[in-house]
Length: 374
Image 1 (cartoon, rainbow, N blue to C red):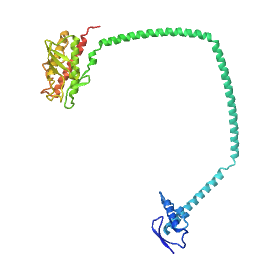
Image 2 (image 1 turned 30 degrees about the horizontal axis):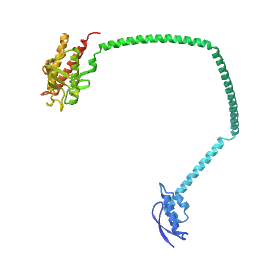
Image 3 (image 1 turned 60 degrees about the vertical axis):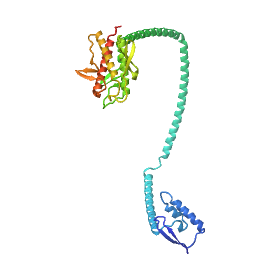
Image 4 (image 1 turned 135 degrees about the vertical axis):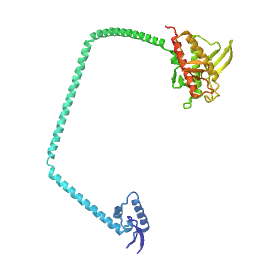
């Protein structure tokens, strides 16, 4: 008798089985059995009941005695559970037969037939009503066409009256519209007369220490540094504004000429009709570092600004600039703020630029006030 070692499919413990007879095709059958067992055990669970039920020989589903006993106990528990469920279902069926007899089914079928007959009758009535509605619509259309034909003459007269009345209303609307346009044009013309164009084109704003012109900051603080590209643009704006103000009041300095060239503006010195020297109002590097090269240009610009303010005061004795100019400084409440960068601090230089912008803004307002009334 041949003996061979196997492993329990449930607990994976080694088994030793003794066979009284061999399987018909031992080699092929054993390979096939192993393939079937391997396939059945692949996945998330092991279907031992299927293996044991389909097994024809012990080797098809080797299970130890303890696992077999446990499986039998589990099957007995399942059988007991199923018996309990069968009894419960049987009890419920008995309850339904006693409390819900089926004697009323024929009556329900008769009611259903009556409802179906009533539904057919209602459908026939609906078809009849739809046919009557269609006939009434046809008669209504015929009478409507007859009425339209009989009132054709009155309709023509009404159209003529309507057209004439519409023309009258159109003429009145056009007259009112023209009057409104005239009044609006007068208001806008007055607003344009009262508008300071220089304030619109050169927006000057001073918030704290640093001033701005058209969004370009003219100042430099260590906690809020400004690059020279922005400072150059701001200086170009004030040179252009100064040039326009001088042209507006019709005066010209005998030696200094402002030349607006954007971020590369400068002041030109002319004598006897000849250009002697130019003073740039643009720098590079770091502001207040001592190597900007715009101090001479700022001094010349202050000379021109002082000349402009003096001319405005000559034309209006009541005009007083907000801040006085002394050489290369501006005075605020007796304190002088130097406008040049050399040997200056960022706060004092920024304050000097803000005072200079304030004087420019006051000059714009005075030039607008000097315009001849229209």
